[in-house]
Image (cartoon, one colour):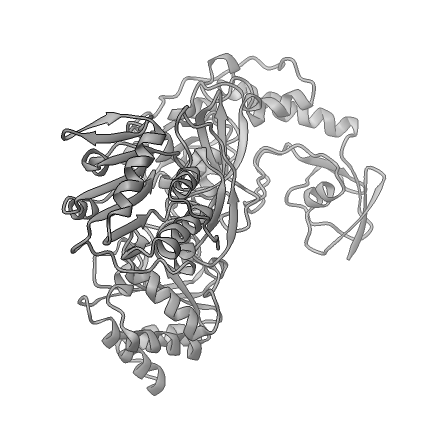
Length: 614
């Protein structure tokens, strides 16, 4: 441990700690702009300069490691003067007039740093020329007039996301933030994750949807869990006047550390489906508005007369909803089919893998953050589960080796050291060949090269996805587990929606079928139904749908019950590694719209049952 003094306060920290970090531990404030806790210190803005006893000049606290006996002062006249001078230079270099900024009306980090120093003006006459605003991207606006050249966005795009789209051209005051080789952002390799927007300390990168929405201090914050896939990223839901303003990653989240993908950050704010606001029943071939009591009466009468009942639920629903769903339809009504809407093959395989490994879960997604070799089996981490893909992509320049094996086109292949295409159904054969290469120490073939890299790796990972799981039998499963154990590799399942793992725990793993089914109860929530489900339900004589949005399934249903969407409900989500996370309700539902849980409880009451919950 190293002992030092900051502003007269004795501090004891670990070796390698920076002065800025030591000050934060001692609750001593040092202003910064280019620094960010999720990025490697850069020392570009010079706002965090401090006075070190014995040093000839002021030093940047964000990059300076502590030393034994160091004496630091953060608020001397020399330091305060330097801060104001740095801010004066920044303000005079570009257009930082708040009243014209679309981001937060004078509530950005740059303005707040000026308020901290009690600045009411800057002494230098602004001497900037206007830059062209790049509005080519459908979700993000790039405005170099607001840029302070802190390079946070560039570092985040590369170091956190592994995409390396952003960079700078020209020098000094002429420096410009550009995408790729200075192409419009909307035509670049940008993947629309929005990390650059969230990490920008000014209005240089703008979320179109939340522009001109007012100050950050005037929004409400709610902790939520992304329901777009089973990674389970935590996010901050910003609302105002009961409307969604913006979604941001939670920098403090243990799993995603602030990262979100396009689906998790922008898709919900772009939602344009029409809501269902009242119960409806079919009468004379058409749906008509009705009351909850009448709708539930029709449902109870029809279900009591049916001996072939199917019940399916969305895996975007909270765990509590899925547990109640199971209690009603499987435990009490003993329906013919009680399962989820998604493909069951990956869910069943995950359960079997867990049983063979002797645990309820497999390995943690955290293992992807420092792995040095990855074998991806049927998992496209560009199209789905993108944040897991970020963990891998950002390490490739550091030597991590990626191998992609798939029976389908896989966008992750672009980043792989080796790619091998196999036919659907050959998954078991491929793994047998892989095991043989491992046992015989084969190095010459492509499979041999894969196994050699995994064998030599200190922290190898094997990821398997839905396209692999669909064709995996017991033999394939056994070989997969055997290879992982021999390599001491992390084995990670990538598949499903927000609560696929929870549904697996509840035993909702039957493959959907609708032959001879007389009635179907579909707890859709805010899920967008597939054409396959829509077509299958057309053959069922009586269909009830709990849904937030209108769709072809609700249009064809006999009874429709209006329920909440993801932001209007609280609940628990269990991600693909078994991590339990709580989401807090962020918006009030329209009048007359119930949560899926409350709707199911009303059904249970009408059916005169007391569900035994998980």
